Length: 449
Image 1 (cartoon, rainbow, N blue to C red):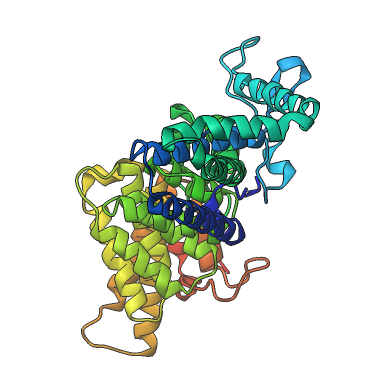
Image 2: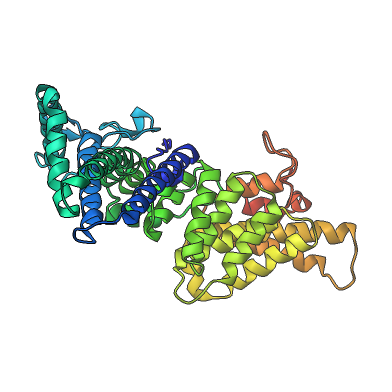
């Protein structure tokens, strides 16, 4: 899954945003200057006539500019797929129908983009251009007649010149403004409106997928995977609802685009500060992005502080698992002390013990923490610390982990056996007990090393 962000919103691309602002300022100044001349005139007719005619010409010109600027929408394969135009500054691949298929509701039924306005725009622009070319020689005469018609409402034939100026100035200005604003803004708006929305079931499936720091540990359903691909076709600036922003961040994290995921999680947390799951997932994305372990731990503790009775048991269990795991990599004695604190706190509540394999992983982390504690106080003796109790608690955690999940033996063997194949020498938390018969039996090692 890859993300192909499209700059279809003026705020998502600095160059497009700058162009839009310059166009807006130019058009605003253009209209203001014209209105000042209109208001400065001394009219013998109705006092608002000149102003009304100015707005009428501006609106007419803008409408024609809008017709000329409406983007075309392509229906491919005889209407079997609907694509939407890629706005200026957008890669054509991001707007391709194949990349953004329309929502469907069963075989043979498809929702297509309504192109009536586009068709009408195409017809009218061709008619306008054709008539203009045919009647090119009559344009001065028609302009003169229109100016005279307007002049009567301004005070009489003597105002014909000024009436002609109003007609040309505001009609041309309106045309340019209508065309440019349609191209710079409405094209992107049409594109965004034609993109498929994330379905409720897809968003829920994606949000219910719990991720962790362990590679490959998350199981993604087909519905969640399809939703992730769909939401990745959009850029973060296109999303406004909390549900879509959270789903986008989750999809980026699943795709291992961790920096983008962090941006999404920060935006989602700003909208929902009390969401424990968002804060937890941001910490996982930070870990994936390679941020310092202390920062990851702080973000996990931050999520921990927001735990409440409404937090789902699944999220609670994964949060404690990641907390105990992250603390194991902090400097002793703080690291193992915090890991033990969180593990014992979680396991002390019988309601938490229903989390199955996640509990087994917490027990593995608990065993590793007591192993670190045993090693530390062996090297730094403290009369207040009972090393035998550390050993017994570590063994208790090992047996509990294996009883819940026999597959945990492999990871525990790695921590106990200094001769484990291809072992990272830093994974030595339980090596103090490598010759302990009970430990060796518990993790499936021969009695004699």
